[in-house]
Image (cartoon, rainbow, N blue to C red; front, side, top):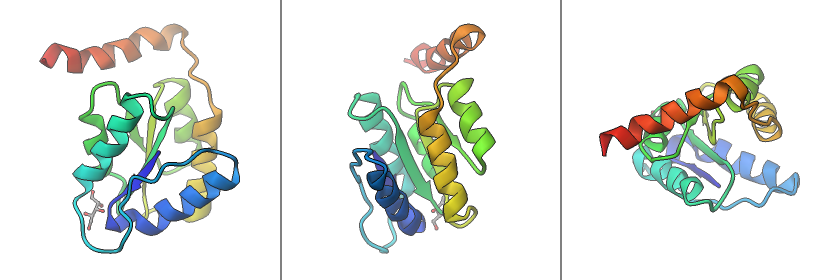
Length: 145
Ligand code: RB5
């Protein structure tokens, strides 16, 4: 599941193509043109699709990777992280059970982005001492409703 605003369009398209070449089934939730759009719509769309179980993971891109990550995190069950390097991508899965990786097209090179996405998809959640912390994260949203 991939999505972006106009600021992340090129990197989103490149990552979608890359993931497809790795035999990952990719659904592109847009945006599909360089016209200016609002990142909350696309971050939420990626989040909703992952929360609904339509994909194990989401990839969300905007100019900085920040706004679209905030949007995705508004959806219950989503643990979205803005990533700039491979180590953070790996740790976000191993320790935080992150399910949406967010990237900033204006801040990260395409190769680092691909390597980070590879690490994100390849790393299992370690569970153990991290499990109750992740449950506590999800409970924060439940407590608000
Ligand atoms: C769009 O210009 C830009 O603000 C957006 O892509 C993102 O960086 C917001 O966080």
